[in-house]
Length: 402
Ligand SMILES: Nc1ncnc2c1ncn2[C@@H]1O[C@H](COP(=O)(O)OP(=O)(O)O)[C@@H](O)[C@H]1O
Ligand SMILES: CC(=O)OP(=O)(O)O
Ligand SMILES: [Mg+2]
Image 1 (cartoon, rainbow, N blue to C red):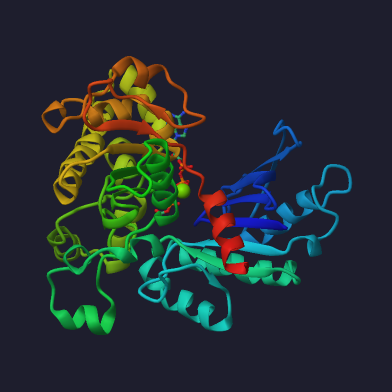
Image 2 (tube, rainbow, N blue to C red):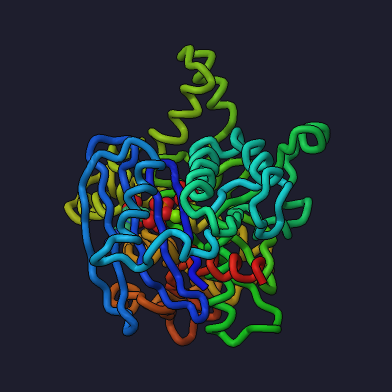
């Protein structure tokens, strides 16, 4: 069975096509810079041995619909395509960031499901509208396929009330859904499961801390495979410092900006979502640029790196308290898998908590699979666990179809 996975972000669209009789990847790719002048599509096809052939295309991609049409062109291309026509796809699995309290599991998409995704627009304005657009487009293109939604928030629905409630009047929760939801759940689930298997803890009491560091960043405390706490909150703005998002901030700052600087609520929202985080402090949002500046001794980049990693350390401490210890801390996603400097400053000087990083291993290991980067005597293992949200979505899509 061929399952296409679509991960529509605010300015990008990632995709993978799986032959799910096993879990063979037929092709994968990313459409970037949607809405800007110079869009980029990077497309990879794989042969049966997993060898990749890469093609790159630069063109304006004004919206997700144009992006998806380009992807369909690549999938069905007469010379290099991986399917003959769009009817070959039996299911499309969509990443949907916010499912509110409506969804704790993967759903076949119906009109009712779409209406609920729409109700969550305000909770994730950068993500949910793009996710729904992707669903609409795929319904029109892949007319024979079952459309399935996999929610970022679903994995976090196991959190207890003491973790997901805010200390605001109860009515705001009961009538307006004001609570912690958490995001990146598909990644936290995949990574914690992979770590549990790697450590031989399946079926045993296990305590895992997952650290997802991409453009958006979040951490989760996972007890026996279930999420008990997470750092993103009502929306993807909360918690860790990110590429362009502030993460945790005193809400009084919002009112100060509105009252003293006459900013409108949407301007403050934009400032905290798109102009803050690493970008706000350094002028750069891509960790590779900040890493280069750090290496050159740039004081601003050094400060920002310590701000970013100090907050990760504080969450490690908090989640070790929530879990009463930890078997492993798992770094994942673009930054977590690739940036040894960020991993270093996030996990050194934590010997008091039983965490001993092996600095050489951390620096030298390239993770294409799970790698241990703690010392043999470290009570808490430190791992690099490459995430695979698309595979997790494909597996969950297959499971609901069966
Ligand atoms: N080799 C690398 N070293 C440091 N950072 C990297 C490297 N490769 C990617 N990144 C970082 O990963 C981020 C993107 O991660 P990713 O998980 O793809 O994010 P998202 O899914 O949120 O778009 C980029 O912003 C970049 O800073
Ligand atoms: C929820 C979220 O922040 O997603 P991303 O990291 O893809 O922006
Ligand atoms: Mg991501």
